Image (cartoon, rainbow, N blue to C red; front, side, top):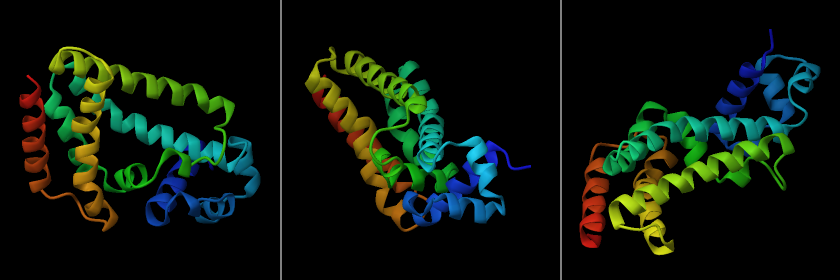
Amino acid sequence: MFDEAGFLEAARILASEHGPGAVTVDSVTQRMKAPKGSFYHRFSSRDVLLGQLWLKLVLAYQEGFIAAIEAGAGLEAALHMPRWARAHLDDARVLLLHHRNDFVQGDWPAELRRGVRDQADRLQECLARFARDVFGRAGPLQIRRASFVLAEVPGAAIKGHLERGEVPPPIVDELITKTYHAIVESER
């Protein structure tokens, strides 16, 4: 009756409404009307629950982002963030308005470290691939440009909308597109 997916969903809702700090064992079990024992049967701690939630959301987001990079569609990768936010507003608010460290205080539980490391490695590989494809090499400056144009610009463009609980409007895509072209074309 009280499965792992249910606990993760309750945590996701609480985090989207009030931030990761509002996700406690008590708040999750109260939301589900579940006994604490059911929680601890599935998760060894709050940090494990929140770590799994963060990793689940980041992997869901990165799926489309990485697919665009692998397809050689850099602009699509840059536009993935606002498009994903429109389709998954609550998830975007949880993921993009908070830092990974807001979910787990201190060291990540051992069982999650590998998933986080694999996710970070895959993202770095994609940024390096984009940098090589677009800027001719994957040195530190080119990877920095890739990170800026693919992640930081889109993040900055939608952050205010997410803070207000708004779906990012279409002009966001236009601004990201113009910025993308200005940076990519100036480097070629």
